[in-house]
Image (tube, rainbow, N blue to C red):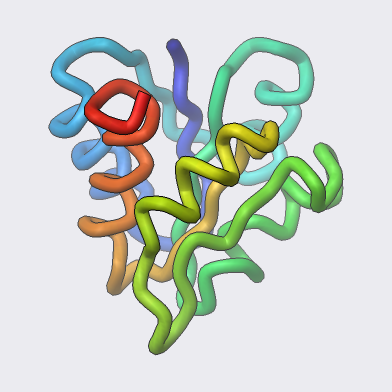
Length: 121
């Protein structure tokens, strides 16, 4: 499984968290938002993760434009922490791109990775 990292902030830290939570079961690549969304659309990646200050704007804008909003999920916003069950349901419904606020990156990435390779799936 390959996860591309986009978003506007903390890309290297998000990548580190993905690797930490994956147990070596995924590959990652940090890319520009546009390149990451196109890679996902073209089947060169399986999932997209991005962080910004609002959780949806800079984290997911290009993914929404390239993939369509129905394939994207904002998993946290200022004042709204990630919900692990909601993330699992989003994946089950076909969502492939996930955005979150930088201040929630640890919880968001942990929940996303649990859903992908850990206890969630």
